[in-house]
Length: 188
Image (cartoon, rainbow, N blue to C red; front, side, top):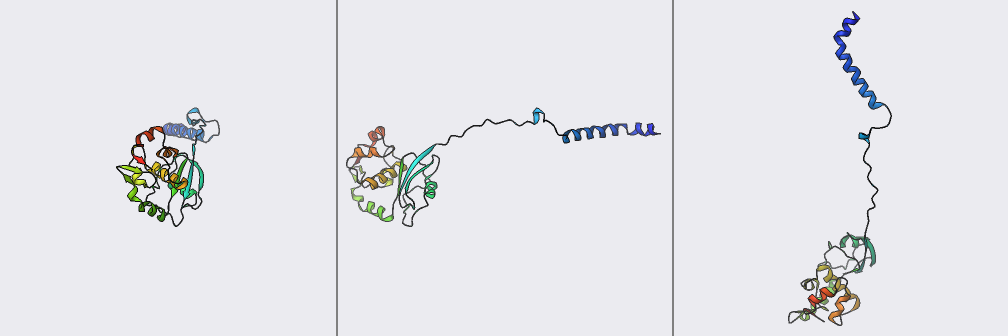
C-alpha cells in the first residue's frame, strides 16, 4: 500500500525535493560564485582644478577666493557672504562662468551713474573710450565678452583710468592677439 501511494506521488515528491535543495543552497553560507561577485571599480582619483577669483566692491567679505573652476559667479558670491544692500546688479551676469585670476567688481548704483554721466565721451569717431565705457559697450569689441568687459571695468576701478590703450593688456584674458583686434577701436 505504501508503494502504491509512493508511485502516485513520485513526481510530486521529486519536485518538492528539488525545490527544497535549491532553497537550502541559497541559504547556506559560503563563497559566492563568480557570477555573483560584483566588478571592482578602479580607485580613480577625480582631479579637481582650482582657480583664484578676486571679489571686490559690494561684497560682504571681499577678497581672493580659491574655488573649483566649474563654479559660477553667484556661487562664489554666496561663499563670500553675499552682497551688500548697496549692490547694483543691473549689469552683472550672476551666472557667468569664472576663470583663473579674474577680478569681479560689484558696483553701487552711484558707480554706474558716474559712468553714465560721462557717456558723451564714450565714443569718439566710432572708437570706445575704455576709461568710461560700460559693460555693454565693451562687450561689442571683438574678442571681448561680458566677463572680460567686467574685468576691464574692475581693473579701471581698482587702478584708476588707463593711461594708454596698451594698459588694457594688464587685464587677465587680454593678450597680444586680442589687443591687435581692438587697438584701433579703443582710446583713453
